[in-house]
Structures are given as C-alpha cells and as structure tokens.
Image 1 (cartoon, rainbow, N blue to C red):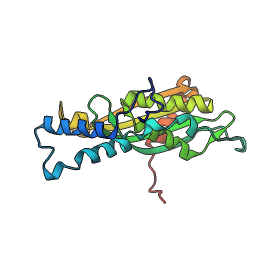
Image 2: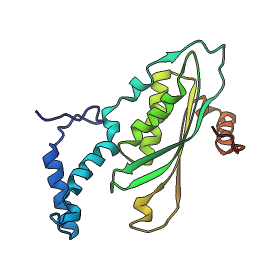
Image 3: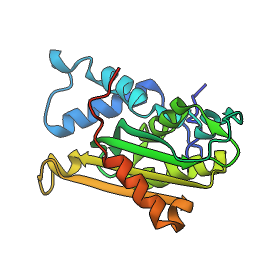
Image 4: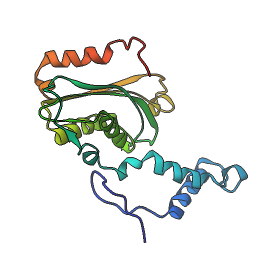
Amino acid sequence: MEAVVKKIPSKTVKRPSQEEAEAAVRTLLAWAGDNPDREGLLDTPKRVAKAFREYFSGYEDDPAEALSRTFTDVGGYDDIVMLRDIEFNSHCEHHIAPFIGRVHVAYLPKTNVVGISKLARVVEIYARRLQTQETMTAQIANAISDSLNPRGVAVLVEAVHTCMSMRGIGKRNVATITTQFTGEFKTNPVLQARFMELVRAPSNGFSL
C-alpha cells in the first residue's frame, strides 16, 4: 500500500515508493553526467531519499496541533512574549536549494499563552517544507494568530539563499529580510518599533 503525504497545504498527493524515489535520483545523477553505477554513487539514491524525508518532514506535522496546548494562569501578564534568534534551515521551492537563517517571533497574549518551545516548533514545521521566505513568514504569523487569538503577532525572518549565492547571479552572504505583522503590531507603530529594538538589542553574552 502506498504511503500518503499528509497535511500538504494545497492538496493531498500520493507519495511515490522508495524504489521510485531512488530511481529518480539515479536519473538525475546520470543527467548531471556521472555514472550512477560507480562505487561512490551506488548508495547515493538511498541516501538522498532518506535525506529528503528529513529535509521535508514538516509535511507530516500540523502547526495547529503544536500550538493546541495553552495556559491561562499567567498572573495577568499581557505584554510582549518573544523568541529571538530561532535558527532554521529550509529549501526554496524554485531550485530546492537551501536557505538558512533566523526567525524572531513575538505575540501579545489576550487570554492565554503557549509554551515557548512550541513557537520554535512552528518555525521548524514550516521550514521543513519547500518554501519561499515570504510564504514561510506569513505562515508562521498566521498559525500563531489563528491558534492563540492574540492581540497581535510579529515575525521577522532573515536568511541567506544559496540559490542566489551558488547559482544565477552568484552573490554571497546577501541577507533577505521579511516581516509580517498582525493585530496591534500592525496598527501600532510604537509596538513595531519595540519589536525591532528587541530583535536588534545586544544579547550581553547571555547563554546557558
């Protein structure tokens, strides 16, 4: 029985078999000009198929489920909750080339909060799919907004894209920055400024 790819954003599609995936890799190796049957490449199709399962494991997970457990006992706290410098690795949907960076996320709780690790989990779920940075930024903000119903959400993503540095124009270390604001973060410039200040504030060397 064929496995089914779950929770695809657009529609559910049937996943090819392991053998079909490996055959596709062999075809690409030959198309690149190498011999898939030489010793160094014999196990490459299996390794690539396994790597793809890991790279794109976000299709198996539901961000709403990750954010489903919330807490209301926060002692009346109603100011910014922020996670800064969430590192991620993703792949662009145009060239399947990696892009690597950091996400900064904040929200203004209304009645409940979520465990901070769950915010990082949402970033990981969306990053482990074929993406554009713009789409991923919006998806993170919308998932938090839909699940927590906060007074506002702010997301900033900064990343370097290897589809720009390793091919095409060939410019290295060019950072792409995208933002998404909802609710009070969108309507209140003071809150936007506070968010940006927190993003850029020095860490003072704090680490564990």
